[in-house]
Image 1 (cartoon, rainbow, N blue to C red):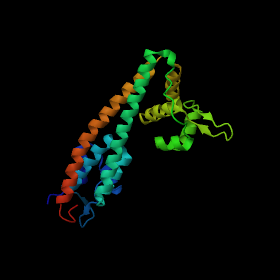
Image 2: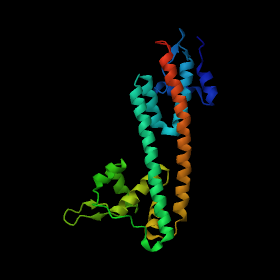
Image 3: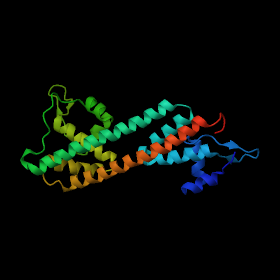
Image 4: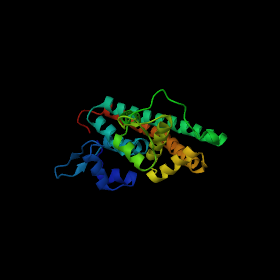
Length: 243
């Protein structure tokens, strides 16, 4: 069997040997064997694992990518595939939200007098319900309120927050833009624009930028899937203890 040094793995990806050791320590690639003198020795299994992990990062992010690789390296194929599925589902949700906001912008541009009010919903949502819908914390929603992004009404007797259809739309938009890396003050400006129907250039530019990011992420997922399939196939064919 041909053995590889940390330098060999690092050179392929233009990273440091310390990064390779860190990925091993974090479980993103399998543990290396050691020579009698204590030096690490890697195999093609490790090289394929590193290719898969580095391809996963632009597709799924560091946290999910690490979760996927650790699951595979611990024999948890189902757990790894579930993490992949969740990430794909999030991308689909982002696309749906993006399309919904895009339609709202078109509506604003075509008929500014409507002020982009969303269709009335059957019932307002509580802070807990909206947090669950977006998979964020209630504290996050309150922070968005402090930043001027959300302006929920209040239940007359209890004073509890109530989020109507327009509030839900604003929260979906804020959630989308936060995932795109936009700061709260920028999001507050964009949400205010869509509320007042006063100019949508900034919003349109933000949505165009996010659409490009989603397209790039989708393409990265295709590449990551191919790399991951190669690693899974190699794990299935590798003799026990070869990694």
